Amino acid sequence: MLETLETIAWANLAQPASNATDEVPRALLRVAALRLEDDGSAAYHSFLYSVGNNHAGTYYPVIVQAMPFLGEILVEGSDCAREVVLGALADLLNSFEPESGYEFVENPAEGRRALSAVVREEALRLMPAIGQVLDSRDSSERMRLLAGDLLDLLRSSP
Image (cartoon, rainbow, N blue to C red; front, side, top):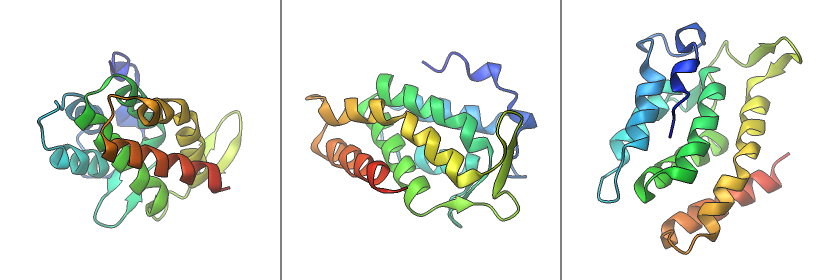
């Protein structure tokens, strides 16, 4: 899991100024390392602060590169890790917004795009992984509830 983290040039991506160059991959690895009996709250906050400002409810463009790794954790992670990912995704999609000054991203193929739209598209790509959590008999009731709510959000919002 997360074998390709090193292939991303994290230091070249717009992210919080306080981040170390490897802050996002370290936060993702911290979430992925969670075990069933762990309390995931520290890893949850660490991840959200690595991609933005958890306190202010904002994110930076670095979130786009982190999203596929969240999908890997949903498929291969422990229950605790999956619950952290579902909670982080729900917050990112429900109440977070791009950090001021980072509302748009440039993509050579698509030009200038709203960061919030790109994040939503990346979240839509995670729907099969979220659906696996929802459908798994091994998922806790809380995880199924989080996954169901997240899928409803993705299906209903434009």
